[in-house]
Image (cartoon, rainbow, N blue to C red):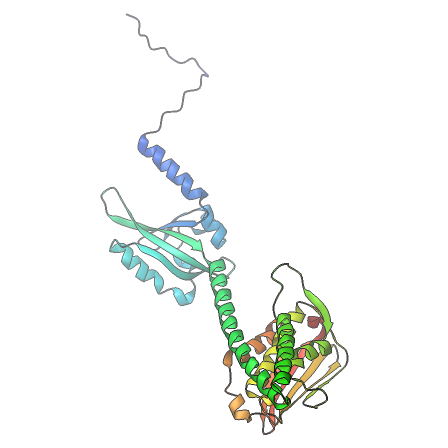
Length: 347
């Protein structure tokens, strides 16, 4: 009886052997791991890398060829090396490490903040033979949290300042008002001017464009005007014309507003006899500005005032304006000296 099975003719391709269910699942899992945006890495119990997906290549900068067979410590900064033995000890005990936030190092040496989830890998006998790590870049989230914290601190600081400034405006207006109506009118005008000055210190959140150009003298006049009596000589502003444009308008207004606020709260403007002289010169494309307060609160009292405000002024001058600042607590009062490159004031 002839067999019904025919031999394939030469050159005829064979159909692919069907995958077993376990093999098919393994291939699908491998494809998911390889295409994941997260860095997925496996290592043995000695901390040697056994697999390295494309997400890990993007996050750390190393290729799989560069890392497989290498110790996982190639991505761990020197000051974090003690974390690895602790992680391996937990894995050996069969524990899973959830959302462990730490810092790792890219191939170029730069740090990256990550969240790690680490799970034990078991063989068919159920023995723990390694660990699987999923790392997610959380740098942007951390920066957003830092910005949010800074904004909340600044908001709290501004609210406190506004109450203090309102009190200072009332005190200042009381000295020169003969009637309640006159007092109310002066307070209303000063608070309105203060509101306009306050607007200069806020970025325009509706559109991405720089503030309207102005000059240093005009900016100063706007900021100090709520505390200035006509021809009373308490505030002296002198210096050559200096153009201020772009985002430097907001930065400089914020700094000057802080200085005036501190003077009104516990400096020269908090007393009836206090005086402020703001004088600047220009040489070799550098603005040198002096803010000198006299006959105000004793210097040792003002020196201890408002740490956040001091930080705000310093970070504006040194960071955004790339300048220098120095404070001198003298017998007559506070003197602040600062130098700022002119090109930084252009925006």
